[in-house]
Image (cartoon, rainbow over all chains, first blue to last red; front, side, top):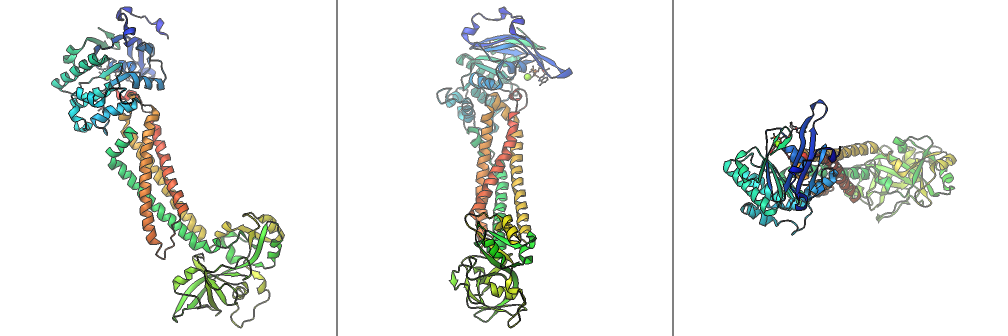
Length: 241
Length: 380
Ligand SMILES: Nc1ncnc2c1ncn2[C@@H]1O[C@H](COP(=O)(O)OP(=O)(O)OP(=O)(O)O)[C@@H](O)[C@H]1O
Ligand SMILES: [Mg+2]
């Protein structure tokens, strides 16, 4: 199936989105499972996030929020539709090319950080640069960035020596250190208390505007939505304002 | 590289444990290798040091007891000598005897000897490092290991039952043993008398002076002799020197047992390493998914694991070998058959590291199947 056969919704496209850069999801459908147990995780999803825009997605469990991040982050290939990153379709790329897109253009922030146990906070950032094959100066300076997220004083600590909120800060810095075009954030506050959650989302909003990255954050936490530029809700694989 | 080193340091207890197992195996491998070399020396060094390419035994002789069963006619050497690819051929007598040596101090020492009967003028005559060479009918040249028994040049050796008196006139500079028994070279004619069971003053039966155990052959150049062609001409059964080792008492059983144990050790080591890295990979599955989501290529992750495997294997094999060689050096001073030789040890080290890496490669295959999608979602 080609993209032209699904109905594009021009009204959801902001004029000049491609020129400005950012993420554009067009008519994406994703079916998961096999045999009788197939689930339509994403159903004709359209989404346009501009560089420097902070978009939140809320919705009940199983509605397809993580699936959308997987498609937007070149982790899965959608059945139909396409994903444009600064005008380049990343949805149909080979596994190898997808990995390249991920390390060059995409940053992930996972629930509870998903840091590497063996590495100190500072090394988490250096490692991300190493994976991306960046030389010093190509990305952010790891130490500076760690300071910026308020973790400079914990640079030598390993994940098990950090609190949940601290881990999440390091996770955000790790995602940003390679200067990605898109930041995909899956339930960053799930393991945090009220005050910590607010801190983390404030930080995300700040970094999004500061770095000019297009950020999508999936969350269950309605208290933090005030920091977001836009809130979309997802129900049964369908996205709406 | 970045992660490999830091993980090695971070999980040093786990890696150290596996490295310890590999090091212990390496120690065992060194000791077994030393024992193998020692047993080979003890079993066949007397044969190894002969300037011989092959032996021609009596027709139809089986390998396992060729030296004790075979009897050939010394004239069969002539048929072999006439062959183009044979540089020299000479009759060779072999026999195990019990004897008593009387030392200079007057004490009697029971010794076992492997008698090598050779013509003093033939190419088989041994070079001596001390004393005189073969020549006198009762003069024998013994392996230097005989000296360890307290027997020296000038001492008398009397063969049990027969009462044949022999005199130690010289020693070889190296160990020459056959079936764990010290070699004593003696003139073929004297050997033939002993073989015929003739003591001093006894009548030697007819034909005894025409008998030998085998015809020793030396190739004209290189180490190739057309054995089947020569056998047909001379009416013998030819065996290369190496094949004849199996005719040394106990040799096949000892070497095959040790080889089997070593093969098991290599297999165990490869399995230990493979299992460790399999478990290590499974434990890190989520972490690997995260790294893949970050965009790391499969090659990047596999390289990291192989670096870890190489470091651990090299370090632990080196440590094990140092300990093994250290302990083995002590063993070489004991009567135990033990010899540390560079070539088998280097081969063993390469095998340990190589097979360990093969085990790790098997584990690394799992990395390919780690789905970066697993990084999303609730766990951890
Ligand atoms: N590998 C899979 N195979 C089959 N079905 C799947 C698979 N992964 C997810 N699903 C289904 O796809 C749908 C969307 O899942 P998804 O993880 O995107 O939901 P979600 O909105 O992130 O939920 P949550 O808030 O619980 O994280 C769900 O119905 C889920 O059961
Ligand atoms: Mg989810």
